[in-house]
Amino acid sequence: MKNLILMSDSYKYSQFNQYPVGTEYVYSYIESRGGDWDKTLFGGLQPFIKQYLTKPITMADIDEAGAIITAHGEPFYREGWEYIVNELGGKLPVVIKAAQEGCLIPTKNVLVTIENTDPKCWWLTSFLETALLRAVWYMTTVATNSYESKKIILAALEKTGDPSLIDFKLHDFGARGVSSSESAMLGGIGHLFNFNGTDTVEALVGARRYYGAEMAGFSIPAMEHSTVTSWGRDKEVDSYRNMLKTHGKPGAPIAFVSDSYDIYNACKLWGTELKQDVIDSGAVVVIRPDSGTPSVVVTKCLYILEKYFGSVTNAKGYRVLNNVRVIQGDGINQASIHSILFTMEMAGFSADNVAFGQGGALLQQVNRDTMRFAMKCSAIGVREDVEYMDLPDTESRVVWRDVFKDPITDSGKVSKKGRVTLYKSGNDYVSGVEGRQPKAWADKKWEVALEEVYRDGVLIRDMTFDQVRANARG
Image (tube, rainbow, N blue to C red):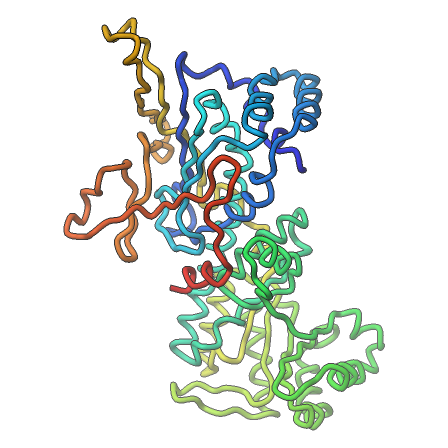
């Protein structure tokens, strides 16, 4: 979809004349109202701006949208869109402010604000909600999902192993499990805020295109079931040996899915018939179970592999296998990650021995309600009629009015009011109204955390992927 005018909900097209008479400015914000986690790892805005908001609207866009929306049964505000094309060169007259991408911000706080800059385009702010909110909630939720898994794995590494290994402990297997190539790209970028491992190539393209990353993620040679089973059951060992001979390199990991028939027998084969091949290659052989109860299968595989390859006990008192590792890529979510690592710990194995691959649960099993994202209008600027103010005509002025919702049936949907923004002091964040220092923690020095990122068709802030990652990794 390249026509921004068509990237909205049907009901938005009838709203250009629903605001109070005299409305000239509409101010809205985006927040996570809570949900599965108490913090958000913010991202997604920069790709959306570069892809959609920096391209001027054209008369061809208006003609296409007008034909579709009118036939659809909705009114189409051609006059407003033609004003943008004819008077503003097609550039959208809005200003967007946002927190830095990669920042970890508690939920229920302002992440983004948007306001029209031309009084004739009061209707544009809310019209952009559908596309803008979608861009922010999806990447932010995936990035936060990935971050929460990272916390679990890092805690295990700190207790039983080497925390410096964290960057490659959760690998993105999600490209085939999402609804579109763009979802794979955006969700995959969100994961790469936290980790360096991915098989989602679209994410690499997106990180390069929208954040200037030369190479944001890495992968390793790996087998799939067909490249094992095509050899036949009686030549399972030959399939592994061929892969090891072809792609094995000293010191480099290489992955072998090994549950095509009997994962436990395969581990035995690795430790007997293939043991010398593994040692001679110098590669780090990564065995991948892909079925069964994850915590049970992973731990049993470690026991079998340890029997043949041996292990060393690290300074923390946990065992690390020689030559081989395990990656679990089936049934991975935060609960199963925790279960696997706990079971390994109880068996005396270091978290160094295992990595995780995650697919649909990483990129697809999230939705807008996972973190209860919403974009709401919080203020409007209305030009007051001098007739009701007892002032001379020359002193008519725009007055800001608070806008908010407060449903008696759901206190969790109460929205913020006023020209709200986000304040920061160290690692603390709190939302408040522009120009008013937060009352909470009065002893702290607060600064506005939202930066202007876009104004009137121009990208103002262009973050690099290194900057985003630095924010995400503290």
